[in-house]
Image 1 (tube, rainbow, N blue to C red):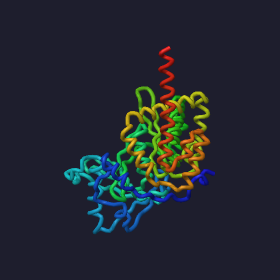
Image 2 (cartoon, rainbow, N blue to C red):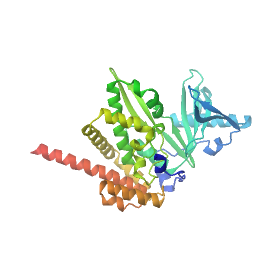
Image 3 (cartoon, rainbow, N blue to C red):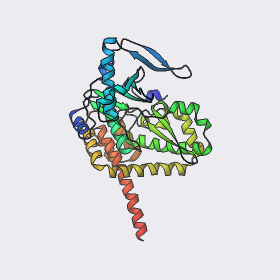
Image 4 (cartoon, helix red, strand yellow):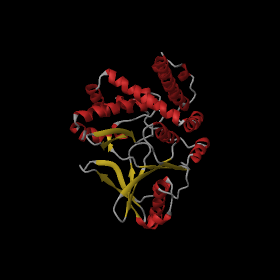
Length: 357
């Protein structure tokens, strides 16, 4: 049923002048030697299958000999710009091991595999068409989530680092049942927090294949983190449900885990914890966030119909009249963050008053 919640095709919104100025100020706008359209000139490709011989919907593409050498040199330079200081001296030690093209979804990215020729260590990065709403999603994630994201924008091309982890759908199918009781409770807690963060920041379409689960071995147990990897549906859809990961059927096993492992009091506690941490990040990154939200408020990254529908639903959800007056998706996000801050400050002030007496 959830397919009806979303538009069939989201348009690409260009990076405007004000957003570009912001990206320049924070070293996100960097000249690169290759564009997304350059990679579209492949002459053929073969399907990529996973370890179980399932089609991954990626194809490994190849290029004419007279273009490949120059293209690979450019991609290796992009790697050095993204992960280092752009020093060309390391290029001879790098190899483009694969260029894959995704035939699924809106962004249709290219995935570049860069290998070190001395030790076979490899790293991925992605080349996509620059889309303003996706850029806003990446920046909001960088500023207000527990994660940091490395990406570059140049004209109509977006370069994103690869986010490591186990794809959510793979984790649910192959790993979740084998987790111990402590691990399952911790995953349930992280899903509640992830759900809350996506809802507040208006990051939509977090079906299981659009996030990863990252296990980290601590000294006596494994800790888990859930992290978004797709920001295509940032602040676009008009249906508020799209911004709630627990709505999608692909996440129902996670939702059942939350229901079985956490009581209502615990769920509410973790939601409050996430909002409080979010408020603290707003305070510590106030200047940068203010500049980003100013760009976002003035930008056009959705249709008026979507805006109208979403602001009415958010008013019904919060009874905050500021949502009904919002004139852009950026203003809705700003209002949501103001709502979080007001509640955080009210609770903090009450705590101080209680301590004083």
